Length: 155
Image 1 (cartoon, one colour):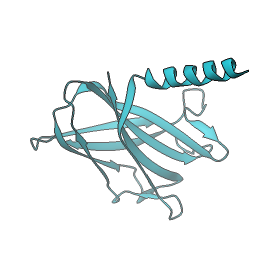
Image 2 (tube, one colour):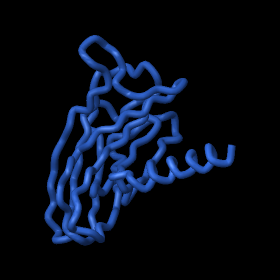
Image 3 (cartoon, helix red, strand yellow):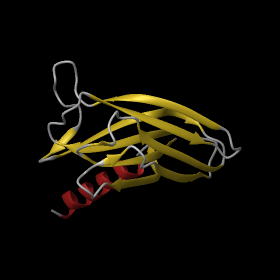
Image 4 (cartoon, helix red, strand yellow):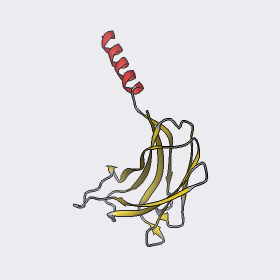
């Protein structure tokens, strides 16, 4: 019995230590007021890169209520680098596939969708700022639980 427990603990330790993804930054902001993301409500995520010898993934997180009424959502990003340069880009975040099936992982009434907005990129050392807004036609985007950002280093 002791041998089985030892091998179980050793296996878990090996799996954890062999992970190639290291989260450098993770933050999620909720919209407590009726789950409305106002068009004027820009979310800013500040993070620091200390190791410029590895690659990174920057992942956008979007949580919404189950059975979202839109197939996609227009999202805008502005990424400011340590040298002051700003890169602006927009995505049409797909919520449902062509058959109407939700693309998010849902648990109860909450659905979480993640999308790598920058994949396997080199980032210089320093402070970064990413500002996220929506460009929905109305004054607010309904049924949004929250948005977040995660920066993962790769070995």
